[in-house]
Amino acid sequence: MGARTARAAANGSAHRPRRSQWERTPRPAQPMGAGRAAGGGGLGLCRAAATMPECPELHLAGRFINGACGALVFAGGVERSAVGRGPEVPFRSEAYSISAIARGKELRLTLSALDPAAGPAAQDLVFRFGMSGSFRLCPAAELPRHAHLRFLTRESPPRALCFVDPRRFGSWRLGDAWQPERGPCVVSEYQAFRENVLKNLDDRAFDKPICEVLLNQKYFNGIGNYLRAEILYRLKIPPFEKARTVLEALKEQEQERRKKDPSLTLSKKVKLRQENPDLLELCHSVPMEVIMAEKQLLDPEHPDNYATFKNWLQCYLVPGMSSLRDRSGRTIWFQGEPGPMAPKGQRPRKTPRKKSPQLKAEPEAASPKVTPRASKQRRRAAAKPLKSEQEEEEQEGQEGQADGPRKGRARGRRTVTAAPASPEAPQGVRRSRRTSARRGTGAAPAV
Image (cartoon, helix red, strand yellow):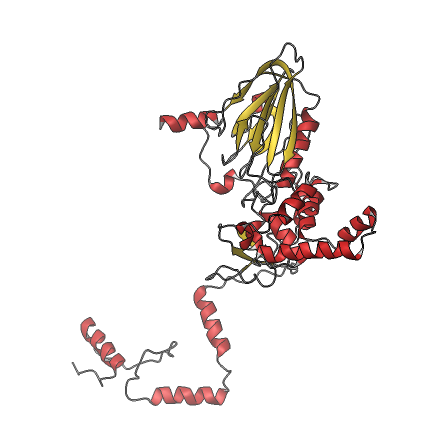
């Protein structure tokens, strides 16, 4: 219990009432986005469904840090929470600046002393956002929960640039080196990215379905779950088509294009690619649509912007689309047939469509309260055809002339008629008469 309390105190959550999962994560679900550059803003994350940060989120995070912190002066050491998934940062300076650059799904911060002669050498940190990482700039006295790394400004009162990660899958490491297993970035290194894919099609990785290969960061650094769904949907490519089959066709098309029009100018080539983009070109242009949008589509501080992002999505989580889990357990959204390599034993699930809003009826006069018993009687009466008065009289006459007891339980109430006075029978005898009549064994024995 002591260790749990220490972790809660490190996260700033001590002495807080426990909340349910739905209360911890704001709704509606939304990916990470760029926040305001003012003191209370930040690059935050709000989600109810897991949407891992992808290439646009990392690039927007770098843009936010450079814009919000470019004119700020930071001072002191770097604070780390007790449960942060990264090492202590051995950097301290009386005055330093922070800059950022993104590459695929990684972000590098550089801490540089304003006086290089008197201060320490520059310190680089490379971040991975995991499933819920984000950066926020906020007052130092109002730190958000799960702020695992904090850089304090020199102003008074100070502010803090925080790396916030509620789910703690994100991490950081010292040094400026990108992960060697990751290929060129689909956004900032497009030409190198394209060449890296087309020259390695003999790799066994391309034996898998195209939807799974798009998540392979060795070749598609920056592509994640919602980007792969949008890219495949726009090209009408089945998600479980073999990756090599799809990409070898691109290689052949590119060679034929060069043979047919060797004299095309660069501007004409760009125009042709924009009109008929292939899969690798969409891996660059689709993330750029999010990054270069007029509104910050991934901004959780502005719900209207997130509504615009939802409208921008054409396939991912869109009602009416089908979904399947790939062999890695990730859900892929698509339209049409899944493809020949679809997992066996799974049926595509349809994302439910939202019900259209119903028009409100005009208010009516208050109706009398109907009990369950009365409602049942009304339903039975509605199910039976109306009888004429003659039929009702004949039925009553037949019921009155019946000599023997009727079999089965009587349905409905009988009309109560006066009976000749008779001596009161004991309760046990009355009960046996009813049982005998119900079973149809004949008249009850005389008492």
